[in-house]
View 1 (cartoon, each protein chain N blue to C red):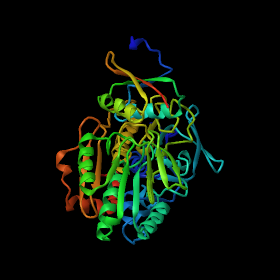
View 2: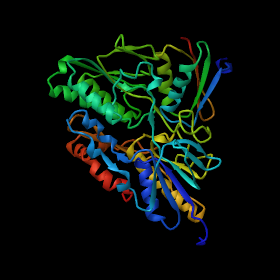
View 3: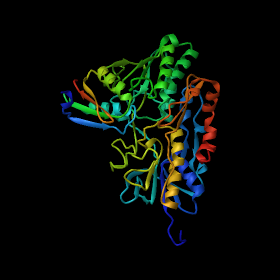
Length: 80
Length: 384
């Protein structure tokens, strides 16, 4: 069901290496509106650890983490 | 090449490590084949890594400068100009003076500039050590510091010499130990990442040292605002840290004279193939050093290694119409772990740092401390 969530913005960071995908998410969320859903695509192994940890620290909502073909999709809701 | 044919014109933008090494390699190896112009807004090359030492000694910075003409091959023309616009479609670079220059091949090596305005409250409140003026100002502030919270760290990524703020943090600890002030000083380190540093193995080492020295690490601290009235710095993540002295690496921007988004991203970092160092959109443009968007440290060593690859590829393209040199992401950083000991991080895109370098010792310290002599005579020549 979660996989059907439509993000307001997709951040394709598949060409980026640690800490690139996380920093691209932070940069986007910083400018984004509360309530919007953001999706980060990452091929970097470090993102699995870093992105959920950052989302928790920053008090946003981790909607889901989905393994796709060759990359991971992180879906995050900006809640404050 | 027919003697009546006009020689290709290679223009190099930037008179720092990357630009000078490219200029010297091409000037030596291709003087009959090409015309070479190096463009710089500064008359001198400045050796930045020694700035951290100037925080803790009383020396001036004269020895960190060399006139550009003295370190650049005589076959290279030098133009003192500041770039204000690049038109990659028409191969034209425009300068602040109103002059312009055309090129057949272009190397972008203009480094990074500091963006103080992007953090509210930064200007006039936060210290740093990324240029001469700021370093001397911070040196005075440290000398008169009587105790309290020293908050160090990084405002935003990416930034030059990623290890420098960690080194300065360790050096601060030893500096105040020497002044017998450790009981009056609390040191905090602000990191935008989930650890002290971006390379896990090195990060663990630094975090252990932080813990041992009582330095408080604030992970995932992405600076939001500095509030001078409260003497507080806040993060996007909702944290607030009070300071008596704030030392924060300012946000960096790349080549802001480029508005073509196929050549550089919004922050001005030039987009090149990570091995060939050639623009993906414009094959007659290469970029090296801090100004690139490459996923590797912005540092003198990386600019030096990249300059060798880029100059080889340009020459091969001019001579044979193909290129084959590849940059593997090699970086080498000597890391001060105190005032008189250092370790070394040597890594590539795919290889983590060599374990041997993790052992802090005097030898690495002396290499780092006296490297500037070798830099001006050896590194800049491109011979090593």
